[in-house]
Image (cartoon, rainbow, N blue to C red; front, top):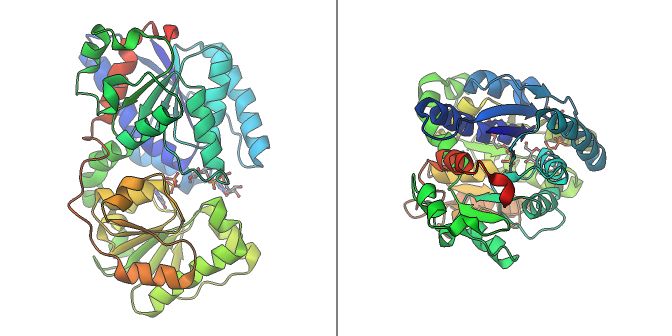
Length: 394
Ligand code: UD1
Ligand code: UDP
């Protein structure tokens, strides 16, 4: 069978890595239907630090199609992607299209495929923040509703879908048994029509487990930045709701500055969107070490070594949880509710005082429970897909 992967933004290159490895393993071990994978990079992210560094470091294949879309308004960017992805799909005629997460690249990939009656599989399906001002919330809801297979990272995500009327939930929303999808198919569960939601676990957890020891061996990030383990805060910031409102951006930066002024160094690998917003708003940065975005292996090292992580990133909130580092989230809500429920993550919003207090009071939660799967989400996804040779019937 032939599948097309559509990616374009930083976290998608990271999610892709374990899935590509699982496809290679599947093809090596044979037995099932071999999978031919075609990689499409929309070009949503294009700076070296936002894109190529991940291909180099994680050994990802060169994209078969690079669409070079670049930046723009939501409509421009999504529209250009939609047109260019459609051309690729018409030429490639895959059996399924895989999209990852909640970006504009995901929405374009899912919509282009669905309109061509090509089955869509959504990795990281079912997440909800219930904040309709987030562009990502529209992207994920729309992508879910035009998908045929919804690969959910958590039981919460499956439950969110069930509430939205997705009735065909395999294995009752529990984590799919390893090597078990075959049995579930044979038992006839999957032969019903309509989209299918399954809990595979989280591919980002797979990635963190896969690359943690390589990061330990290779990364010199702490030494290079002059940081000592457990003696600094790591911050990231890029959500439109924070960067595009000057009061929020200024409030967050003041919160970080206060933490640094109290003696805990703060390092902020700055997303280009944030750098641009700080410059345009004329917000100076005192005491916070603002650096270029770092590679994944360096990021894992910085996360593991931090005393506290302060972020508005979805992926970084989870990685803090994986490594049992307390997290302060610069938002009012999160899709990754399990991290808050387990006591590792505090929602602090954007007011300086709240950020400062949350960072100071950040405590360790209970021993992290395995809510994001067992590190084998990618192999479940791949074996599930390979069994779907007659996928068109969903
Ligand atoms: C996008 C995703 C967001 C995801 C984030 C991961 C959408 C709607 N948003 O947000 O869900 O969390 O990626 O990082 O898809 N820019 C550069 N160089 C680059 C990329 C971007 O300078 O390589 C600048 C441009 O000024 C651009 C801005 O960053 O306009 C925003 O980029 P864009 O891809 O539109 O959204 P992100 O904020 O990165
Ligand atoms: N990341 C990275 N370098 C950085 C910042 C983040 O490698 O400078 C990684 C991080 O470890 C996580 C992913 O990028 O795996 C998260 O991406 P991002 O915060 O851009 O997007 P989100 O997860 O919020 O969609």
